[in-house]
Amino acid sequence: MSTTQPLVSPGRAALDGVIAMVAGLGIGNLVSLVAPGSSPVIPVAARFIDITPAPLKEWAIATFGTADKAVLIVGAIVVTLGLGALTGLVARRSMGAGLTCVAVLAAIAIAAAIPNASREMLWWAPGTAALTVGAWALPRLFRAHGRPSDETGENTGQSRRDWFRLAAALSGAGIVGAVIGRWPSASHLASPVALPARTLTPLPAGIESQAPGLSPFVTPSSSFFRIDTALGVPNIDVNEWRLDITGMVDRPYSITWPELLAMEAIERPVTLECVSNEVGGDLIGSAMWLGVRTSTLLAKAGVQRGADMVLASSIDNFSVSTPLPALLDDRDAMVVYGMNGAALPPEHGFPVRLLTPGLYGFVGATKWLVTLEVTTFAAKKAYWTTRGWSDHGPIKPSARIEVPRRGAKVTAGQVTVGGTAWAHGTGVGTVQVRVDQGPWRDATLGPEAGVQYWRQWIYRWDALPGDHELQVRVIDLQGKPQDETVAVPAPDGSSGLHTIRVAVS
Ligand SMILES: Nc1nc2c(c(=O)[nH]1)N[C@H]1C(S)=C(S)[C@@H](COP(=O)(O)O)O[C@H]1N2
Ligand SMILES: [Mo]
Image (cartoon, rainbow, N blue to C red):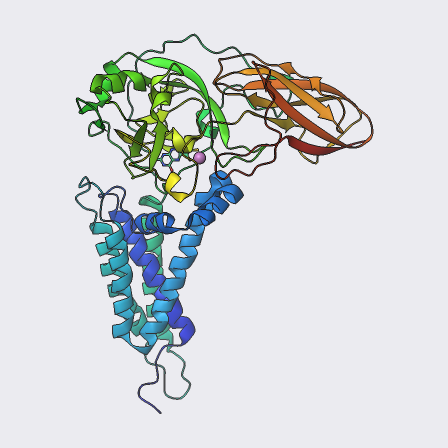
């Protein structure tokens, strides 16, 4: 019998690799509690998102929408466990090579955690802990299988119990560490903050009660769509947060949280849409936003001639390029710290985000905002505009049918059709519905909250039995109908009529 014959079966070796990986990552994750934001998985996955080709990212957003991160996390877990199994198989041939794999994987995690700003002193700790635990566990798991008896190749009962105890302890520690450590999205630890009093009278009540399933007039913050490239939500301490106003200005300066709160606050109803939203899609929401005018903040710095854009960057190095006029004109673009009467939720940019009414989020709504750099389109590019999306992103007027749902079966007679419509800047004038390509008929509009906000609409339809097509369009207050040309989201937003079919019986 050859002495180089591995003592551990391939299945067991792979399982040992997986267990060592779970233990290492779990404990590393637990250690990341002391070094916030640097769990061993998140930085690797975050770098992965950065280098993912834009079309794949867009496909993920289009296919999974707000769930794209859940899909990515499950994918990351599967790939990670697969790497663990591979490491186990390598270790079966040579423990030295196996431990080298562990070290290389840990080195990647540690390198990916190198912080952009030197805010996190212990960024190296989680990856190092994962390395230590993984490198300790792997050879011990192998040894615990014991030497197979010469006759049968089977392990003894004693060694099986040893292995089982060790494996259970390591997996248990790993899983507990993963759960109580900072697993992605488990990090919603916004510090309680006091906000200035609200300045505006509350919005009128919507008409959602008249059509079950219709979007509420104001989208609750908890169900507001979320789109960003961040895996873990950045956890920002308001005491350390600063907004730098730099670039082509006479007097660059930084503003702190208390200084920002002391400035004159405005509160505005604004509908925010993602450029990736398909016609009829749900990447849109409407809320009441509280903050300070960007025009005031920029005027304090003294914008120099020749500038035509502001590059607004986040703590996680995301950026948008907003046309300068949109931040200075009377649409009241703002640096926002309140949403629907409370502090900005972590997922939506706590403590501070940019909000430019009338522009898609990718050119006007940086979350976790830390820098406003006054510059030019010729000099700088932003995150998505370097990936082929348009420099200018005004939200295209559109309308959608929310009830009945596409493909619904309804009873003949009076059917309530309803939805939302928006025409930023000008405002919604009329919403019209058409059945089976017939004449356009006016819908009844819900309350109005300014030209940057959507309107609900309802249409009472006398439905005859059969399959029918329903379409909707918005006409703005200047009488201009929405663009009916069918366009996909890239590069500057979708257009076309929202069209659904329903079965009436
Ligand atoms: N820091 C950061 N801000 C960001 C993004 C991002 O990826 N990172 N995405 C932008 C895009 S594309 C959109 S549509 C809006 C969405 O804002 P919401 O998640 O609050 O709905 O945020 C914008 N701000
Ligand atoms: Mo977006």
